[in-house]
Length: 185
Image (tube, rainbow, N blue to C red):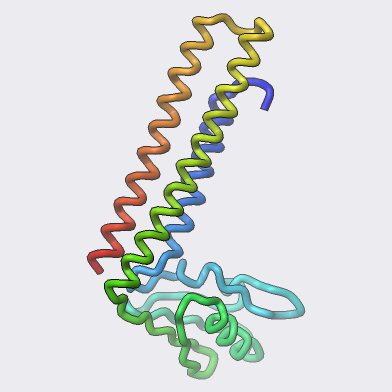
């Protein structure tokens, strides 16, 4: 990044926050969410397909997920993909419908999930800080090349810091919400 562009930096920071929120959504809280199956890829038609392209994922009950597989020939592959995904779920096959009960979380597992959520949040903070660093370097370069003056450099530095603080705060809020969700289920 050669020039300072606040909108571009904001877009990149929003992307880092969105990535964090997607990772947090995939963490199991003991409550059924269609996002739990996002990492599952099914061996279908000679390739790997996301589960939502081979069937409809829904949550008919708070502790149950269902996958209505479109193609009868993919039921076994879908069942296997869910079992092998490493998310601790065991589907029950009922024709073209897979019923996936969500097991109760124990205290130890909850603490592990909170640690993992904290790790994701820290990765998000680091990503936002790296974007801030890119912006600061662009500002220094612009000042050194006499494209902007010291006053403008100071003004942009302040607004970049406010932008960074706002995104870090958003990450912290998402983390606190997820931690509360995991520990109180």
